Length: 146
Image (tube, rainbow, N blue to C red; front, side, top):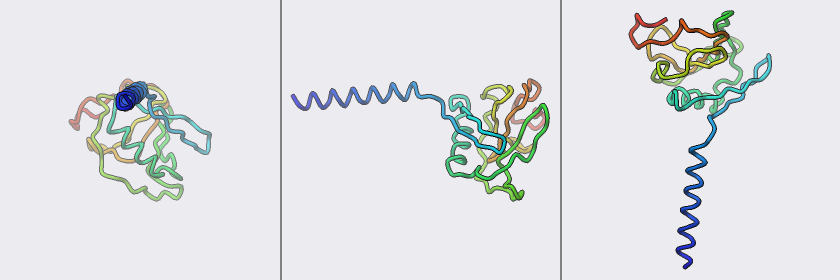
C-alpha cells in the first residue's frame, strides 16, 4: 500500500514538473545601463544556440562593465564587445548563425552581432532601434549578406 502511494506521488510530481516546464516562460535578462534598465526576453524556440550563447556570457558576468560601442541612429545600438577603456572582451568560439530561423528584425529586438564572415557571432549583440525589413538574413553565402 505504501509503495503504491509513493509511486502515485512520484508520478504526480513528475507530471507537475513536466507541465511546469512545458509552460515555462521565456528566459528574461535585466540589463542595467547608464541610461536606465531594460528587460530582454529571449526566445529559445526560435534561436536555441544564440539564446544559450547569450545566457552563458550573461551568467558568467562577461557583459559587466561593457559599453555600447557602435550606435547608429535609426538602425541599432551594438554592445558587449569592449570595456569602458575600449579593451576588447575575451570571447568563446563562434556559434552557428540562426538568423534565418529567428524573429524578424523589428524595433527593440536583440540579435547577436557578427563580422562579414557567416557563422562568426560570439559575444557582441545589438538592439534594433527601428524595424529593418531590408536587413534580413538570407543564407550563409557571402553575397546574400545585407
